[in-house]
Image 1 (spheres, rainbow, N blue to C red):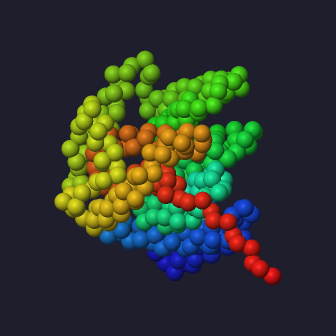
Image 2 (cartoon, rainbow, N blue to C red):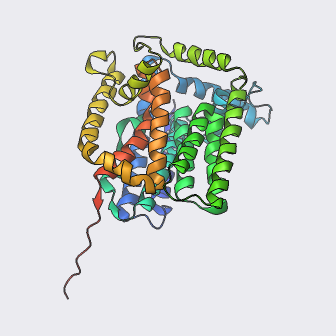
Image 3 (cartoon, rainbow, N blue to C red):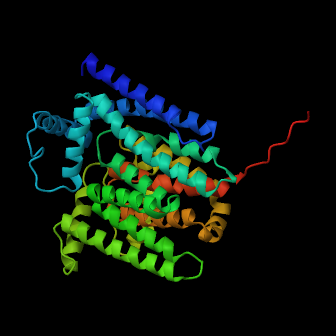
Length: 396
């Protein structure tokens, strides 16, 4: 990398810092504005750490996406279409095209391109934090958002060209749209989040859409004609998203055996390398899923520096769980009246089952489970939060 690459990176970082301060929503308190600026500065560092790790190990998806992005960028600059030699627009094909656009906008600077993807993820996390603030305006959520925005793996893993950053952006847009928006604005934002998730990871889009339906069904309010129509519409959306997801994998809904074989094959591909873990099936896999997500890697499973950091982070997360445990059940029970809590619980359970049951590699799990950690941290922080103390009026 040349000096120009670092200068371009500096320009993008400076622009992001200014935007985080100047264009933050007006209802954000001053402490959240400062925290958003600090989160941007942290991403400027973590994207450089990701580049260092890639060069240390000599490979990685981020480097591959960047190099392919350079080729796509050259075609884009010369107005040569198609940009990418693939008829598919899902998954890897989508991220390659997006990488080409980002590499073009950053003039080929790798640090700047990595930073842009880090900001994609940060925007998603900020949307989730904003949804929490709006759903519970009477709670003191400062420590919760500090943990969420500065949590090491949530800052580190999406700070590079890859699918993780876009998944966080899609999840944030979708969740914020469901909880905060109403009417036409809600429909547009939910469609944007769901469509982005469908393009990047179709199976995640199916789970997110299903979680929205489950949250609607768990609402304790009485059923009305409007609610019935809304729920029926959501079922149609889930069916459409599921059909599109199967199409992206070249599968047929009428062939469940082929679907199961495909899932088993993809899961088996993750069980390679020194970080591979044993795979279970049936009830055993179901029971191990939350353990794999929230409590592994264990100390004796450490094989490299990245797994060591993931293990230490797991110990920290265990401490947060123990702290919130006495109040967590009450939050889930009483929180049924809150769309935020219902949806966060449904998303956390769905993603925990997916990643915990079908990914058989601790290294992959450490990166993939950050989406689960985001929603789990929101619930844990909300469980231990306290009402905002009324400010005493000063005597004149």
